[in-house]
Length: 93
Image (cartoon, rainbow, N blue to C red; front, top):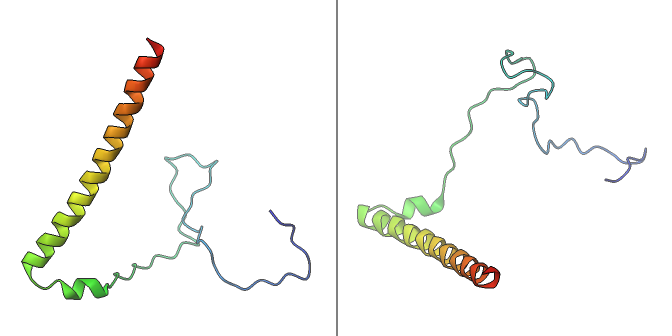
């Protein structure tokens, strides 16, 4: 952490809004204080890619492609962990 010097200026940007975080000393069953909390609905995310997927076939292909990628990554992890476990069993027995 850097030390704050008098010549540093605040740029008034909020990095993280911590108004909704409860105090660590406050018990979980205690009611929350809503004094400083701002309750605004988040804006929905708009994607340019979503406009291109008009037909159900295109959406299905994208979903299946993402599923295939996720399953492939999962299988790589399973194979690597299996090899590590097999190596440990061979070394320690």
